[in-house]
Image (cartoon, rainbow, N blue to C red):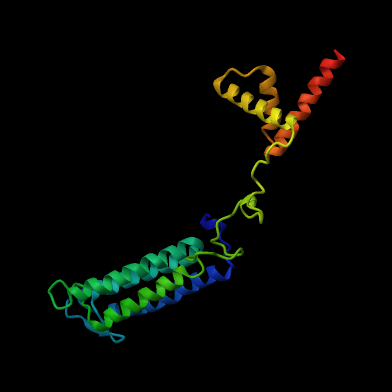
Length: 228
């Protein structure tokens, strides 16, 4: 299903869009306050911002992330859901990666333990919101992410679309003639009459309908021969 096919007013889509905007506003506030505080861009010691540690680089990344989330929310549909799941995964990866370098000179984002906890929490929230109503073994019929199902696959009778066995000699002969005509058409050896009759049944959906049409044309041919 394309993004355009997802109804913008459906509850699932509204949750995705509102969730992305709310998380983006929190992250953007953190980033803007970091810039207002005049933090050093690569200051590995960091400075406190809303109970977290930050520097210029982390503030920049926060604002860019917030803009991406807001843009995806404005676009809506499948994109907002996908972006939230991707960003949420990156938050989790960032939490553990920065935890590994926290006490080293490579702590470029000036992470402290509160930052790790926040990244894990924000990542989980984004993953839950992004997957809401989309990741499930069985989606309800009104879900905008549900792939369209062919009508014959929804049939209560799983054998309804299977061709029935012939019950009379005439039906057996019709099946045999249709099979022979099809093989002849594939090999290029079909007669003009076989090609005409195959064209007549080609638009029919079920095997039973094709068989009936084939038998009807056979009767027409027999009547024409008798009149001649």
